[in-house]
Image (cartoon, rainbow, N blue to C red; front, side):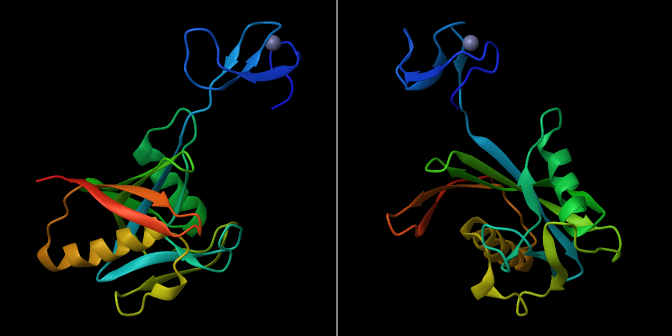
Length: 193
Ligand SMILES: [Zn+2]
């Protein structure tokens, strides 16, 4: 960010009075441009004993498999965003389960929060959207575990299939941190009763 969105004046990077963090600020009109974490919302779409995954057509992790998920838009709720992303990426119509919120991941290193919801596929008329190469249903055994795009997706899927065996789906929150080699460490922080 180089120029102010309001007055086109130059932007500086400094700690405003009364604050304790570096911010982008416009010295001409005194506006502070706060940068805050993004929410990424997605679903675990289920049909029978299978879960719907998308093979990514775009970077990052092009060609690898993921659950349908994407950035929340302004003006929508978390669960509305998750349903929209599932429609956009997998062409899939879903109904969220009761107690649908399933996993929450804090990723402070990259300023993101992930939320996944459990959902039922309404029908099998799914098809890859613009951001997917392929969309397919997998049993636990069929999932390409070595080709999952993101650690948060792998953790969510592993936990989901464990929970299927007990039919108990508590909400779990995890912290995700990255080593200098970009290896994710995922720590369970809380689990609902
Ligand atoms: Zn300005």
